[in-house]
Length: 258
Image 1 (cartoon, rainbow, N blue to C red):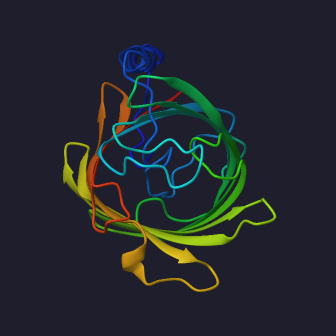
Image 2: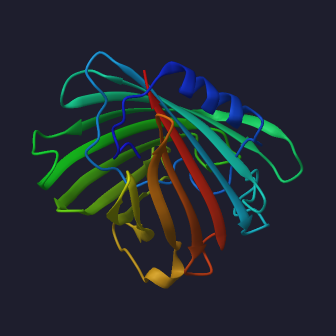
């Protein structure tokens, strides 16, 4: 989310937390709906992103015993991160949800390590890798332990940004399988620190035999990236392109670097 890099101040971050603390906790779509780009926090500095999404129209029956169906569910996920070096960033997600009935839950944690190769931050190609290990509750994942490896590739040209993530998700259960997802982003800088664009989230199915795509979740988001009083904002409205996807999802990510 941190494609914009403003000089932030602590009071602004506190304001963001206060404003979000009154919002319902969340749980429908994934805990983070974003396409990774080449942003890293300064070495030796901390940061915080607050991921918030709500499925206003989605599946209302569980896919497996113990699942919390996504219909009318919020997910709120604070993400704490720390700059290890100019190329490495360490992050921690704390997952929480609130059901349609108003029941709030803590749903686990995920640890990530992000690498971005040296590159020109203003123009040209960039690439990197993100590795994530998580332990989650049965409400949001059928298997508690999961590993994700995310490839990051992107290109900047003038005011345009194009980025793609190829995700390989693997349950660490003996019966788990590896699945693929391709996430893409196209954004245009319209000026005044505002970027408008679209994000696509396409599940491809099992890594051993992906497709047909109409059997899996495919979703498109209209998004805006900006900054408000020193806060980095990514907001979007998503709609499902297949019957397997949540039909309407609102997302908001608010970020601050300390």
